[in-house]
Image 1: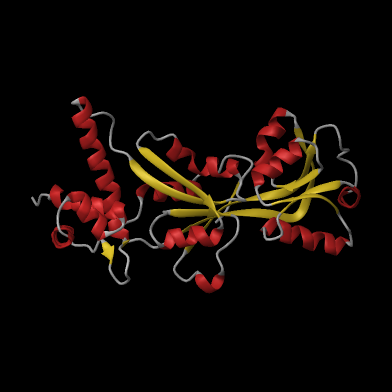
Image 2: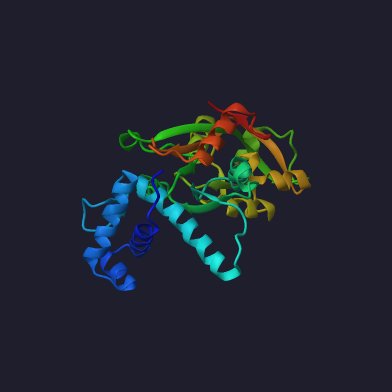
Amino acid sequence: MARLNYNHLYYFWAVAHEGNLTRAAELLHVSQSAVSIQIRKLERELGQELFDRGGRQLVLTEAGRIALDHADEIFARGTELLGILRERGSPRRVLRVGAVATLSRNFQLAFLAPAIANPKVQLLLRSGALPDLLAELDGHRLDVVLTNAAPPPEAASSWIVHALASQPVSLVGPTGRFIPERPIEDLLANEPLILPGRHSSIRIGFDALIDRLGIEPRLAAEVDDMAMLRLLARAGMGLAVVPPIVVRDEIEQGVLSEISHLEGLEETFLAVSLPRRFPNPILDSLLRADRLATTPQPFATGG
């Protein structure tokens, strides 16, 4: 059986982390050509290109990212062995997740719950704007992007968009402050409203709704971050236009109440991935679980 040359792997590991052949050679106290030779030998052993050498910078390929994950684990274990003279724990797999800043934290926790509960899984979570996260996905630095907005169609030819769940949108406010029987038109026209940012799918749908109703709403706050929207709703600043999942804990505690459902408005939760020659088994299991099992209430599982 073929055996991996860990000296070759160590040279690759150093270059991948330094991101530069010259710095890695200086760190290893060898010439650049020696480093290049070692990496080429490792690529022949593995039968895969580990770096994309098309540009001026060394960029990891998909196979290179997987090799780096394993190299990190291997050398971390070696450090533990030297430090405590025994192995500790069991191998951990890495799942790199990006989530748009406007996405419900409760939804993220529900989707990632099986991975969070697995002690063999290491989660790396990043938050940001959708274009930045999709660039990270294309660069193999993320395994999946969780979003409530579909990628732009002109750029989505290679992305796989998984519809995970959908959640109705409601008016939510402090318990006891608003009368649920009031007509929705009265609430929208006369109560201060806390709205998502103008580029969110919820806000687009909401703006269309009030246009149909001929209402000029009272805007108390416009918030891009769902966590801040949740805090403003708790503080009683106004009625929040939000999926109840975002404020589930506050509703269960009786701090906030769902005053009225907004007919026709819903938020769709999506997972964006790429076709992989080496699929991440953790991500595959999460996507299968979401499709084959009922998502924890109050979700309605999507396609």
